Image: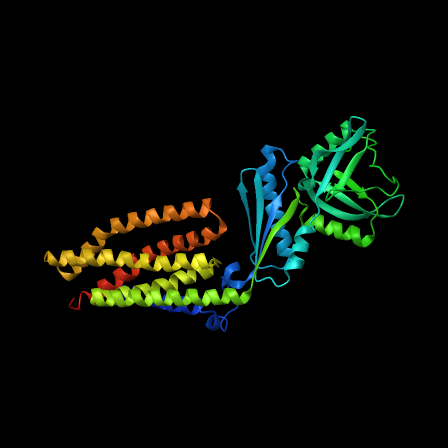
Length: 421
C-alpha cells in the first residue's frame, strides 16, 4: 500500500506539472498570468528579412581570419541589438575562399533602416605610405577597428575643433607603437570605410608622425562637425568593423506568409498526434490508453522546454518536433511488446511490466543515443535552417526518454496491480 501511494503521488505530481506546462505553452492563457517568456518565432514564421553580406578578408592574415570573422559577427550582433531587433540570428558560412555573413531579422518592419544601421558601422584602417615606382601608395598596417577598446568625442587643443579620440586595447597599443616608431617623419593615413580622412591643417595629405606614440591613444581630426564626430564615436563604440562587408543579397518574408505556414504546421502536428492516438488505442487497447496519456504529457513537457529555454521555433524546428512525437511512441511500443511477451510466459502482471521495461530499455537507450548523436552532428555542422530541426529533435528525444521511463512506467505500475489487462 505505501508503494501504491508513493506511485500515485508521483503520478499526481506529473499530471499537475503537465497541466502547468500546458498553460505555459498556450500564450493567450499564459499571458493573462505572466508576461514571462513568450514564444520566439523564426524568420519563416514571424516574417522579416534575410540579409547576406560578403566579407572582404583580403587584407587579413590567414592566421587571423577566424578571429576577425568571429569579431565581425559579434559586432554586427551588437549593432542589430541596439537597433531593437529581438533575437537576431547571425552566423557565418564559408565556401572555399568566399566568406559570407548571414543576418536573419525576424519580425522587423523597417528593413531599409536595419540595413542602413548595419552598413553604417565604420571600418577604421591605418595605412602607411610606401613608394610604388614614381608614385606612392597607402599600404595597410594591420591596425584596424578590431583593436579599438573605446572612442570619445574630443576637441583639439589648438583649434578647438571636434575630433575623435581613440583608445586601443593592449594588442592595438603595441601595434600602434610599432607603426609610429617606424614611420617617424613619415605620413600615416587614416581611412574610414576606405575614405581618406584629411586633417584640417593639412589640406591634401596624411598627418606626419612626429614621434613614437605609446599608451594606445590616438586622435582623428578632419572635416568634422560636432554631430558627425559624435555619430562616429557612437558607431565606433558599438563596434568598428574588423573587416569590410558588402550586402550581396536580401530576401523579405511577409508576416502573413509566416502565419499561414505556422497554421499549416500546427494542423499537421495535431493531425499526426490524433492519428497516433487512434492507432495506439486500436492496436494496444488498454496499453494504448497509457501511451496516449503519456504522449499528451510528453507534448506539454516538450513545448514547455522549448518555451522556457527560448528555443526559436521555425518550420524545420516544428518538423523535428513532430518527428519526435512519433519517436516518443516508439519507446512505449517496445515496452508494450516486451510486456506482452512476458505475460505469455506466465509472469504476473506486475512482474511482466517490470521485465518488459527492463528488456526494452537497452533498445530504447541505444536507438535514442544514435538519434542524439545524429542530431548533434546536424546541429554543429550544418546551416541554420537544419539547426532548428536538429535542436528540437535532440530535445524531443531527451524528453521522450524521461516520459517513457517516468510517466508510462508509473501509470502502468499503479493500474496493473488492480486492473485486468
